[in-house]
Length: 338
Image (cartoon, rainbow, N blue to C red; front, side):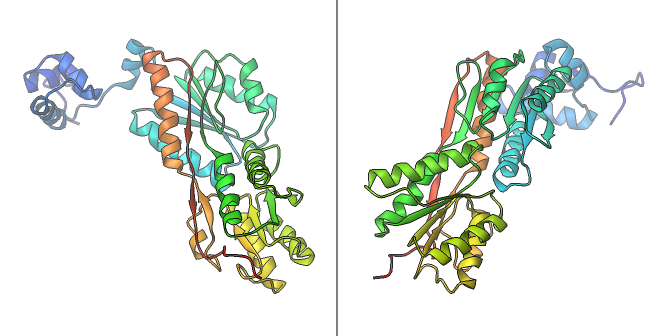
């Protein structure tokens, strides 16, 4: 960084003098304000580069009374969905000019959620994104007044708290509808934990699709999202031979199901079709490649932060956004055997 003739670090006023513009114009460029011509922006950016000017975030926060920091409360980051949702939120926040402070819960409880919210308030964050996919989360937020905008990922929120989510039930209905369209009538569901918002929503989508088609919804087995639980439940289904198709709550459990079926001599998809959920990068390389439901975590993160920024900077009211999922058909599904 270049120092001025007085020996101090360059300030915004020094950039303005070098570029021959007002300090207000420099401020607009630094803060990515749209009302700056391309020629002026280029001139100011050249002066910034020449002087090595860096924005003083601490001083700026004193003026704006903002920390330019968003707190993210997260849990279950060992799971694919929450981990990639966090990545999407973090990238979108940085693109919007905000830092991210992350607090990860080892165990999910009302007390742990409230303690983390208090921690963020002590940090003077401008807003909080909550990535705790359990049904009790919204209840805690209804009782806890943060004083800053809050966006809950995985929910549509309420009058006080905004929400951003992928439509889990729609994705489940698409998966089961795909199997029904191929002629399957006995479709089992290996769900995730029912105390997870996503687990319950996907199970409800499975039920809704079956009932709409006049089919029974009596083949429900609950797992824990792990490949191991998929393997154990897959062994049970292979022994019972009660279903011609299985909708699995996530791709990790589907991997376990595929191994269990392979060991039991159950051919996929000739004997039983399998559909997963998430579209992990490896899903297209399972044996056979897995039909699954893709979630756009990057889009979810962008929409989440868009809501947050509107509330922080424009004082917008709480709102919600829903990202549609996409069915990805591969070789693990086909018409049932005659």
